[in-house]
Image (cartoon, rainbow, N blue to C red):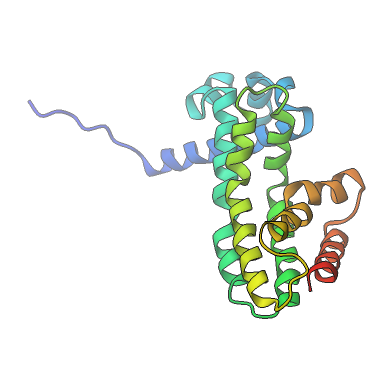
Length: 203
């Protein structure tokens, strides 16, 4: 007797994918707003317009949800394409202006993800590991840019690890957050300031 094959409806799969995206988006907003420790799966379900059972079946536990948010954020960051564009530039000033624009785009686009992880640090036992996963490629990208910048500058004001540290200080998530969140600057104003500061210091 032939075994009956399970049929996977493309429409059903698309609906399931949309449900997962809605759950993850609502969870990121709640984690970033209230803090991971103050959000429950029923809270996420209510925000997404589904049942808690659907949340567990579609994404998993609250910890699984945060884990997926991190992975999604890394994939969506577009850092590889951005670095590829930066490494062909030959003018140090242009490079730093474009770096400011690229990191602004990344931080503005991934703001909820970064806030969700940041606010999970006190409550999630693996939050630091998640933060490292979320920012590890970011650090590596800035390291590659720093090496290229040093190679372009005949007598760099800083070099090696110091350049890496300065780029992370200015263009890492904390630098952007300090200006935009803690001081109420617009992303555009922060971009202009960070670009000017980096050029004045390193060029």
